[in-house]
Image 1: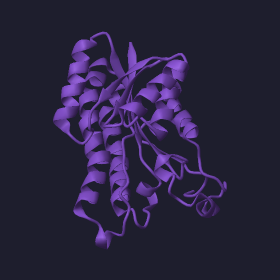
Image 2 (image 1 turned 90 degrees about the vertical axis):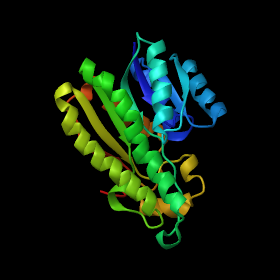
Image 3 (image 1 turned 135 degrees about the vertical axis):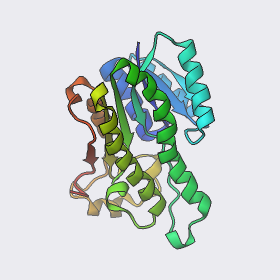
Image 4 (image 1 turned 120 degrees about the vertical axis):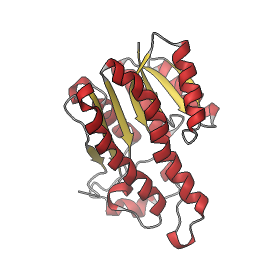
Length: 243
């Protein structure tokens, strides 16, 4: 049985992506979360309401020993299942001006996005390489392409994800594994709830924030057979703010 592992799937973009992948491709969804079990259970309930299925997997993407222990244990218990799609979605923001930024805010943001990408992908890609198939989709950001003042740490983390995407895609292309990144702009979610939407949408040519479902549809396309010749790409979904 083919499965999709979505990191940080308890809320926002991660939840929308998890639900869409189950709906479009009939994938068994591994709903990863770090601490908010209630929210993760809501994601799983929504997947099941839409006719899909899955299970919860708790681990902190920043900690390699924890990632390996949980994923290896899951593989041992589920020899008939295969993680054919990996979505590296887990990410956090700790915004602030660089000159006053605490070291912990730099480390936590970088470690969630970039170390998290390394930890989870290195584990999941082993089976993909053996089976000669797979889809890896990294959720980056417009911040990683243009840089955003007050987000030096987040811009650095997402920029690193983008560069890693391009390099890894070249390493595994012969094994029919595609590696792509999606770079959302302003999307209505928990991460943007404290932003002044009325003010910010004036900067966006489409004059609105995006919806989580719109990003989920793009991820779903990249996970499909229709996208089998697309790899190493960064696809912007931002209403024209960085065109």
